[in-house]
Structures are given as structure tokens and as C-alpha cells.
Amino acid sequence: MKELQSYLGGAWVSGDGDVKEVVNPSTGEALASLRSVGDLAEAVAHARSVGGKNLRAMSLPQRGEMLKALAKLMHEHREELLELSVRSGGNTRGDAKFDVDGATGVLGTYAYLAKSLGEGPWIAVSDPVEVMRGSKIKAQDVLVPRHGLAIHINAFNFPAWGMVGKLAVSLLAGMPVLSKPATSTVALAARIGEIIVESKIIPEGAFSLLVGSAGNLLDQVEAQDVIAFTGSADTGLRIRSHEAVMKSGARVNVEADSLNAVVIGPDVEQGSELFDLVIRDCVTELTQKAGQKCTATRRILVPQSRLEAVREALLDRLGEIASKTGDTSQDGVRMGPLSTRAQLDDARAGIKVLEASARRILGDPERSDFGADGFFLEPVLLEATEDAAKDPAAAFHNHEVFGPVATLLPYDGTVEAAASIIAAGEGSLVSTLYTDDRGFAATAVAEMAPYLGRLVVASEKSAGASISPGCVFPVVVHGGPGRAGGGAELGGTTGLALYMQRTTIQGGGSQLARML
Ligand code: NAP
Image (cartoon, rainbow, N blue to C red; front, side, top):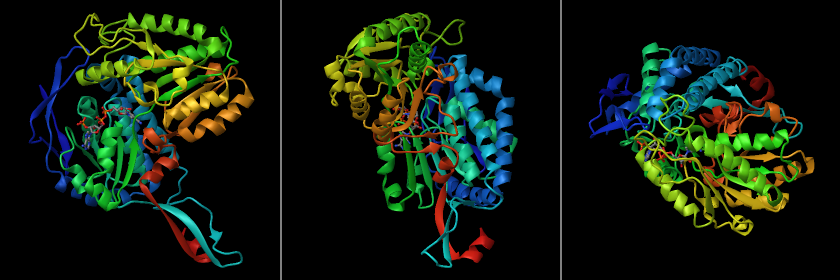
């Protein structure tokens, strides 16, 4: 069996921890083994000094060319990576494309963005302004690469997009990266790491890969470092409150749990294209990657008058997918397993928590006849009463079940009621509004947006071109307030700013013009 290794200090190394196995979640078959590395002091110092210097010696356009070459490399290895994604992540081929092609897409987008950022070692992000009216002294803001290490700690659900997406932004910003994928699905991330290292596209020290647990990584954190973490709120809190992280004041970006909602406007008629879109999107968001997406829909707000129609349509479509859940290497399978036995146990326990506030109307969490020995959970749909939906303490407003699970929440069709239900989630990555009523949409923006990183508005007119709301484009911000972690990744230059220091340069107007 292949042993996965870490790439640290410019060399492939085996760890010294206990041997762990990673398995195919569709079958339980062992795919590879690994051992965690305990001491990361030298690896971090090497990446920070050697990698940082090498990257900062490159201009922004040169770094953009590097990303373009990496995108091409990913594309050349696409078939191999898709196949590994199916085997190691329990993904359908469609799920695998979402992860792998999504990764290539971020590289391509940031390579293109590099062309508009100028030739200098910094990015000017404001025009010069007089510090006082009539003064010759002006001030202008620039972004410069931080002189530390970008530490990327990723969740298990997107081993390609999570790792490569963060890498693209950091490298363009000029920060070296140490990437720590989640252990359970590390096989894909490790293979991408091998391909990247073999290609020698990234200069020495600017890319390190840590397989297995984090060892003493956080003890190494210094003031110029950036930690970009994706995962559960509990781990996020542990990272934020780590002594070295707090003492150093290093920058920390957290992407955590999210109870994303969709709001079906009272004007959405059964039989309309918009109604069909609602159902299509809900089914995609519940079942793509078996619901293991941070942006998956967890709460479906339905006006009482549309409840029966929405319920029936969803039961029909999700029931069909339940009958096609299984080993994703087999033809005709529409949804795969959860990533690990522990995730399955967590999801089953989470459904019980939701059942305290809502009744289950579809799916048997204990079902086991999937024709393979994997970690399967069929789609589960719950329904609350209108009164329960309004209760901010109800479980579906504060407990994320990371699987193909959502709850129907009836509401009275007013934007005020919908907004207060959204707010009860205490901060989400994304919510979607389906309506043709402009007044409803405008009020919703004002009332809901403070609780969201992204608000998708879908209408009858745009229904044909609409893209399921869980798809995160590199040009839009990914992150959300409160429970979602308060982070902001991607979003073009917003994402770059995470890895760069915004500094005001203040001086004589002509001096600034010459410098910047
Ligand atoms: P997790 O258990 O929090 O793990 C996330 C990462 O943190 C893994 O790489 C894990 O490593 C690492 N980790 C665990 N303990 C650590 C520690 N003490 N110090 C440093 N690193 C540590 O989360 P998960 O189970 O992988 O992901 C599921 C959760 O992620 C869900 O709750 C979901 O909402 C959230 N998520 C959020 C987003 C988003 O963008 N907002 C995206 C995807 C997932 P090991 O694997 O080695 O333990």
C-alpha cells in the first residue's frame, strides 16, 4: 500500500507518528497509509525564509504566469485526479469535477486577475488623497505581501478546491504556503501535491505539504503569518485561541459551519420555470457531494400556500436519488457515501437532534442496503411547523448536519418573517431568494444581507441561466459572518488582501506619484 508523505523543507519526508490508513468511503477498502510529522519548526522556518524570498522576487505578472502553468498542469492530470477523487472521496464523477475543475478554475481566474494588478511589488488600492484640504501631503493605500507563512488547514470535503484554491490566492499575493489537508481525504490532495512538486513550477520553499495531523504547527506561528482555516467551528475556536496564535496577533481567517437557507417568495407559482428551478437547486444542494458542502442548503423557507407543492416535488425527486445512492464507481449511482464512519455517526446523531424540532418526512438514517459496505446515508428531509420555524432556539437554526439533510420551514410569506428566520442561523455563507417581486427582493437585501456572505437572487427571467447557489466562483467572496466564521476568501482582490498588508503611504504628492 502506498505511503503518503509530507513535503517539508524541500524534501519528501515520512512522519514519526502512528500509522493511519485512508480508505475508500464507498467500500471501506484501504487506499494508502501515512504517519504524522511531530515537529514542524524547521519546515516552517524554511518555507518562511526561502519560499518568501523566492516568491517576492517574482513580479505579479510572473506569479500570474506561474498560476497559469499550474492550471495547465491540473488540466493535464484531470482524468487521473477525477478517478482518484471518486475512489478516495466517495464522489460521483460530477462531484469529482466540481472539486477538481473548481480548483483549476481558481488558478485560471487568479492568473487572469494578475494581468490587471500592475508590474510592481505592491498593489495600489486607492487613489492619492490630500490628508487635509489644500495640503501638498497626500496618502495612498497599497497592498504588500506579508513576510510570513500562509498556513492552510483544510476540511475533508474539497481536498482539491480547498487546497489549490487557497494556494492560488496566496502565491499570487506573494506568500509561501504550508498546506495541511484533512486526513480522511488526503489521498487526492497528496497526489496533487506530488504533481505540483514534480513540475517545479513553484519556486523552492513556496509550497509545503503536511499530511496527517497538525503536530506542533500552531506553536510556530509568528506575527507575519496568516492562518486560513476551513472546518468545524470547534476546531476554528481551538485554532483562534491557541496561545501562539493569540500572542503573535497573526491573521486568522475561519470558514466554519453554516445553516444556509433558501427563501421561496410567495409569488412563485407551481408550474413556473422559477418553481422548477427551486426544486432543481434544492435537490442539487442536498445531494451533491452527499450534502457535504459548506454551502449546501439546510433550511428551505416555504410560504404556507406553497408547502404541499414543494413538499411533494421534493419527496418525488429525492426519493429517486435515495434509490440511486451507493458505490460511486458503479454506473447509475447519483449520490455517494459520507467521507468517514465518524461523519456518518455524526450525521445520524445530528438528525436525531433536528428531530426534536421537526418531523422527518423522508429518509431512514439507519438504512444499510446500499449494495456496498460504505458510509451511506440516503437523503433525509424534515418539516417543521410554522411556529417551530420562528423559534430561534430550534435545532435546525443552530445545528449543522453535514450530509444530505434539510428541513422545510413554512412561513407566512412576508419578508419580515423570512428575514428573522434567516437571522436565527446567526450568520451563513449563502442564502437564496426566489422571487419576481422587486419590493420583496429589495427589502430582503436590507434585512437578510447582514447575516450572509452571499445572497443569490433568482427570478423567472434569469432561471434559465441560473447556477445552483452552492457553487462558489473565485470572483465572489466566500465566507460569512457569525457562525460561518467571519472569514472572507476568494472574491478577486478581496482574497489577495488576506495575505497582504494594507499600508497607507503618506508623503508629498509628487513623491508618491514617482513611487507608486
Ligand atoms: P474539522 O474536524 O474541524 O477539521 C478541519 C481541519 O482542521 C482538518 O484538516 C483537521 O485535521 C484540522 N484540525 C483538527 N484539529 C486541529 C487542531 N487542533 N489544530 C490544527 N488543525 C486541526 O472539520 P472537517 O470535519 O474536516 O470538516 C467539516 C466541517 O467543516 C463542517 O462543519 C463544515 O461546515 C465545515 N466546512 C466549512 C467550509 C466553509 O468554507 N465555511 C467548507 C467546508 C467545510 P485532521 O483531518 O487531520 O483532523
